[in-house]
Amino acid sequence: MIQRCKRGQAVALALLLLGCAGQEAAEAPEGARPNVVLILADDLGYGDVHALNPGSTLPTPYLDALADEGLLFTDAHSPSAVCTPTRYGLLTGRYAWRTRLERGVLGGYSAPLLEPERPTLATRLDALGYRTAAIGKWHLGMQLPFLDESTADRTPWNGDPGVDYEGTITDGPLQHGFDECFGVTGSLDMPPYVFVRDDHFEGQPTDEQPAQPFPHFVRRGPRTEDFSTEDALDRVITEARAFLTRAAEEDAPFFLYLPLTAPHKPTQPHPRFRGSTALGEYGDFVRQVDWSIGQVLSALETNGQSQDTLVIVTSDNGSYMRRLSDVEAPDHVERSSVQAYHPTRHRSNGPLRGTKADIWEAGHRVPLLVRWPGHVAAGGTSSEAVCLTDVYATVADAFALTLTDAEAEDSLSFLGVLQGEGAPRGAPIVHHSVAGMFAIREGRWKLVCGNGSGGREAPKGAPFAEPFQLYDLDADLGETTDLAAEHPEVVRRLYAKLEELRSEGRSAPARSPSGS
Image (cartoon, rainbow, N blue to C red; front, side, top):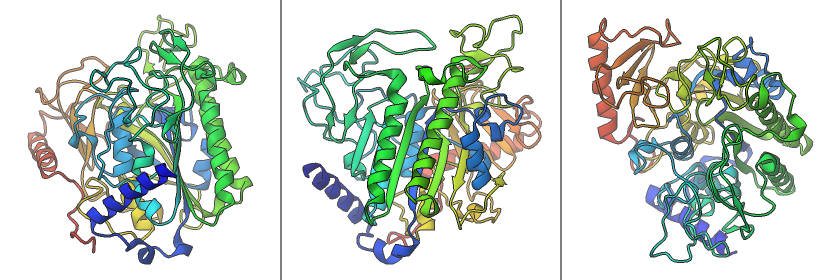
């Protein structure tokens, strides 16, 4: 196939630039290569997973079972408090604020964020002979075909900038290590409402999707007749299960990257899940997400793949469901249009301060569950701080792959943690908000380099505007007490470290050019 050749050329170029083409087969013996399933929920909060929030009435039996069968992290973080930059960091092991995207997210029509020569988890595993697939929400930009390239506006959040839906997508998942892909270009609330398969759109939009308010929030834009937001998650899971069935018929190991479309807005569970919780449409939607993950795990079991598969389940950032402080005001249960819960009913972000997009913990502390039979002990919990950028180096470490300075600049392996060794991360974690506010975490201390949330909660503040905020997360997980005035030496030290990590272009230790 032409697509396969184009993608293969990009992989070969990336490996040539890394100086390690041809090394992988010797570094990772065939018998040591598990399958990899990486599931990225969209806006699933820390407190939405019952195993992390035992007082919750929201059932997540499949996620809880996964925690019983593997390792549950209580101090895991997305590299950003919003989705596009986290996806970049997860697939590349590099913070997205080092790219052109210094704040915000991409839209459904945006140009690619992944650089042509940038290695990804998919390019590295593809080079090992893995069958690779990306199914779900891409949201890393694509080079879409336009009817008039000279006047095309790739930045609209509504409408249609003139896409040629019969043309070829020349930069997407296929050009970044994936053999096949299916899903949507951006979030499910962003046009175009047309599914993408490999390098083309599946249909010609004939309808205009009107804008709708929360909870079924979507923006105005073109839609195909058969595109249904309430059916989208089911469609993604059906495609994922079909991929796993096909992969079971082949000898090659596989890598399934499964970025779900939910529980991100539109908060629209399938009708069969409506009323399945006492927490309104959002609660029902989380219930559907849990069931959907269970369907993937069930497919692995049915196909005899469970024992040979490394499963990683996490979220791109915290939940958008706020904690309502006014006890007299209606919440989401009483009025579905309210994007908040009374804390006595549910805390989507658990005890954490803030919400999605914020620099505070609710923005970026996320669920992380890892199951790898025979390698990760069942039923464990880890309090070691890790970042989703670390998945890249961890997979490389597990496969005995060498990394160079040309890749995964912000990725540190937590393979030792998976194997029961409580080794702290070898570098601070850098957090980033939707507005570009930074924070740095080292041990118990977290320094917020700004004077607010940097996101949606008040006060929003501004990046690097003083006074900075300092929190002792060991004693104050809810970030209620600012200790900056009491510990100016910690503020100075962490700020200097942040500036060093920003200017050096990496936070992982330097590696030799050859990767040795």
